[in-house]
Amino acid sequence: MRRFLISMTKQISKRHGLWRSSNHKCLKQPSESSAGSRVKMSLSAGAIAGYSILGAFVGYVVTSVIFLKCPGILHKKKKRDFVCAHISHRGGAAERIENTLTAYHHAVEMGTQMLEIDVHFSKDKKVVVSHDEDLQRVAGSEQRICDCDYEDLPLLKDEINVTFYGGVTCQNKGNQEKMPTLEQVFLEFPNIPINVDVKGESEGLCEAVHSLIKQFKREKITVWGNFRSTTTEKLYKLDSEIPIFFSMRRVAFLYLWFYTGLLPFIPLKETHLEIILPDVFNRVEFSFSRGQRIILSVLGFLVRSKVLFDHLKGRGIPTYLWVLNEEEDFKTAFELGVEGVMTDCPTKLTKWLDENPQYWKR
Image (cartoon, rainbow, N blue to C red; front, side, top):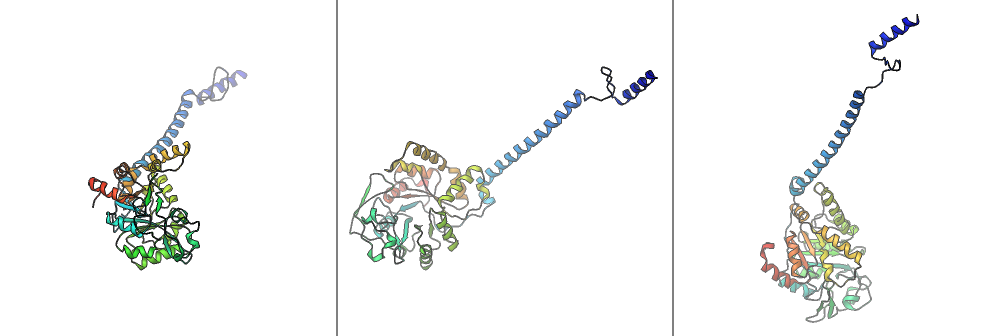
């Protein structure tokens, strides 16, 4: 009977592939071929996932490059009423006392195409043209502009250091002058594009500047903004039709988007990019530590991107570099594809542009 049962068990086991003669167990063990198949299947799934990720990344890069080179595919080009290669920083601070009517007239006579100015609010709510909020550097007074009525502001000094031109001072070549108001500047130069940096956060300053721009019908030939994003946002909300430059925060985002490939897909409300060329810090009398100079070198490398400037140009957004006062810096800027240069030396820039007409269109 026992032999009969064993014989029957063997036959059933063989029929179903379960018999292992070595140990007489009725369990089917996985073969090496079936285990290998599962490993191959697992590897195939991993490979598919990897290739999918790689394909998506390559597709993203290719698409980003195409839209970077051809921005008109996704974005309507911004329209402008003027083109400027020559911009006088503070009216040409190395040739005439900065931010004065005399400086502005001199710069225009020398061929500048845009005046760059800064404005603050006086105590009696006049929009005063000045870079500094206090009067120490330009007038030798410890008072602040916002604490003085316009009529009480002192005359400017006869000699003022040029901030972005190390070792250079500007000498007064005529009568002592007073800071002008923005209204006076608009009256004197009705057809000259003006770049207005709205300084400070005085209540009502943005609204007062806007009112003057509207009053003199300068919406198409005035660019405004500030390094502070809060001020720039306020200006944009006041009037989105007036050209506006990037705040410092938005400049940082702009470069982040550019180097990550996102920029071609992002709409930009700004109309002008105005950034400092880090090389400028080699020509000023600021004191920098070794670490700070390393950071400046890295920033200098990152900022110098003809690809970025060309992309922005394709979207109707010009780039202006500041504050450049040496011929080698002029050449560097225009070879990078920027549209304009802000300078303290309008006469020098005009002479260089006349000698190098290939870099700009009149």
